[in-house]
Length: 61
Image 1: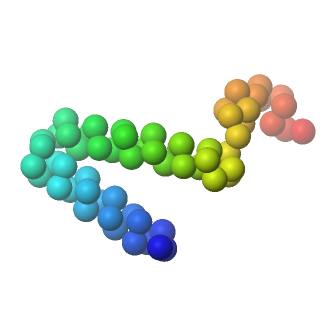
Image 2 (image 1 turned 60 degrees about the vertical axis):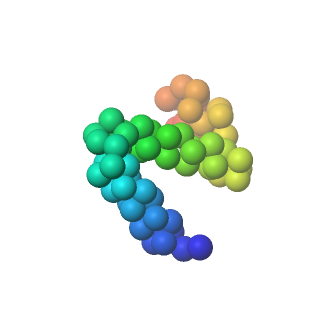
């Protein structure tokens, strides 16, 4: 599935949540989607936990 299709589906889900559940539901769906995205990137191996906890000096090397 292409990233354009995934983005379209995510936008539709957020639209339905905002329409039927209000702004609070919209924020909840957006936050859970972001968490799912980060977890998915970790599981695919694109990100490592150490990338977020290194000091600024370590990143320059």
